[in-house]
Each structure stands twice: as C-alpha cells, then as structure tokens.
Image (cartoon, rainbow, N blue to C red):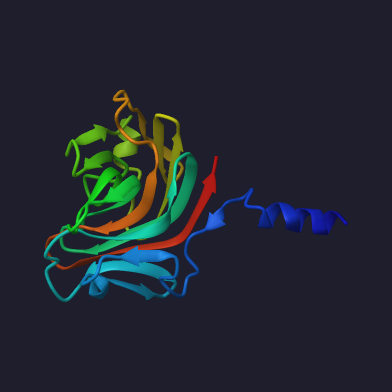
Length: 199
C-alpha cells in the first residue's frame, strides 16, 4: 500500500514533470524553416550547427505556458564563441524568428545572468557574487530557474547566480519555456534532463 501511495505522489507531478523524453522533439514547437537547427543527439535537444554560421537567433518552445515554477535541466555549449539561453515567461513574436521575454543566459561571460530578450534588451539580473561568475564549467552544467511571482532566481551547479525581482507591473508573469541557439559562428547548445515543477 505504501509503495502504491508513493507511485501516486510521483505520477501526480510532486517531483516535477519531464518536458523531454530523451528521444524526440515531441511537445516542442519550432518556427517553420528552422527545423534544421534543432535535433536530438545522445539524449539531448541540440540547437545550432557545427557546420555553418547560424544566421539568426532560433528557438524551440514548449506548447504550454507556465507562470510559477521551478525548471531544472542540464546545459552545455561547444564551438567558437557559443551563446545560448533558456527563455522563461516568453512569447513568440508574430511573423518573426525572435521571442520576447526573460532569458536565463548560457555561454562564456553570460552564464547565469538574466537578460530581457527583444523587450528591454539588457541584463536585468546580474551575478550576485564573485562565486556566481565562475559557477559554470566546461561540459554539462546543472541549471535551476525558480519563478515565484515577480521574483526570479537562477542557480548553476547549486550556486545562486541571480536573484531578480521585477519592478515593472506591465511585464507578463506567464509564458512559454524555450531553448535558444544564438546567431553567430558555428556552435551547438545541448539541453537534457529537462523537468518543470509548477508551484
């Protein structure tokens, strides 16, 4: 009976819901014409290209919007000057390749910062400490993003990198989760073990 109860708790999403089955892009949406930039390799969603320059920012997004949540995943980047990010509370811009909304940044010099993509176009939440600036490492990094009301916190490898509270009441607090591969020289951004727990 106790085992059955535990199984029920797990299936009810107390420990979070997986957003990626490790095999396909089921549950994710890509803008028409950008499918070539997104694939699944070795249990990870991979964006970008190691063979050609990425012409413009490209995104793969969830089909569902989320408001208050804790998102966990593993991320790594490879290539020359790699730049990527994790969109939260974001929307696609109509008839455009861009998304608008908060972005938890990924890449050298950017890991763990909070950027406002296509809206205010600036870093809204910078590193909270010297330790935060060196939280990321080569290879896979554990990323956690927690959104509660107007407060957004980011951790990389268990180190708090950003703690931001939105002051503008006009900024939406709900939207899609998306993965980004930034424009630029050939590189790849890989994302795996993607899970979300709604609060």
